[in-house]
Amino acid sequence: MRVLMLGGTEFVGRAVTDEALARGWDVTVFHRGRHEAPPGVAVLRGDRLAEGGLAELAEGEWDIVVDTWSGAPTAVRDAARLLASRAGHYVYISSRSVYSSPRHPGLAESAPVVDASPDAGQVAYAEDKRGGELAALDAFGDRALLVRAGLILGPGENIGRLPWWLQRTARGGPVLAPGPRDLPLQYIDVRDLAIWTLDAAERRLSGPYDLVSRSGHATMAALLEACARTTGAGAELRWTAPEAILEAGITPWNQLPVWVPPGDLHEAVHQGDVEKAFAAGLRCRPVEETVADTWSWLQSLGGVAPQRPDRDPVGLDPDTEAKLLRG
Image (cartoon, rainbow, N blue to C red):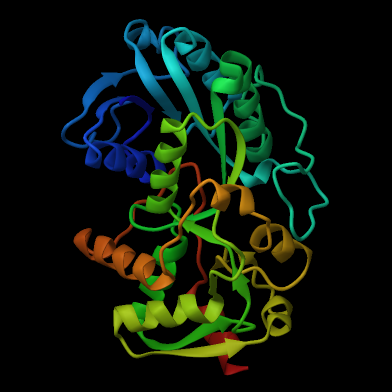
């Protein structure tokens, strides 16, 4: 298979690129040159937002294009139109964020989505991703696969969610553990996303698929206990009721990554219906494997994870944590 990766040097794009190379596929990576492309790929360079930035894509044919863009939908529109006659299938890595509010437990691909346009400049994340979907559909029609990913964890993460928990448990001592312990989580390892995406593209699947584990694939306890065991620093998990955390003014998801207390937002983030993707072959590895491999990757970088410049750092500062733990 001949694959064109639009991106391909960081987190999701890099995982897809690595998986395609592992299969022995012919991979071309088109990127801005800010990060090194993996060995074994053909490299094309350009800035999708610059005048003439797609010039190096003017020639060439590919079986599959994979696009991870999360900014202005016009970037997806322009690339997809340029490639429509020379590529067999277009895979757009989208997000479950495209669904409009209110959301409900069991939300699936048929749920209403936000209003968006493929001709828009960069707006809010949900509208950007939905606009990108529309751009892919406009150019490729039933040759477009929309991968609506949920929470993505694993080696290479440049958002900082799982890396923050690993770094925190590695410091040891009492750790604020947001309860309840059995709170179900719904996420996907980036490598499982890559495997499913390339399998689906090879089979020419099209339309939207929510790509995330089943709810309860792990719990907060399973995740944090795996972090504590893996880092081996003697962290003491202090399970704390959601009410106490919220009363202290601590923000779910951002200050305590991954965690969302029981309620409407948890139902939207961690209780979706993903049976369509599982019927199409999705498999999710154990949380312990995701945690251990992410820790190994972090250690290979000296314990410092990369951070996307367009995302705010996540995590709780030590003073706020200590104050709540003291009661």
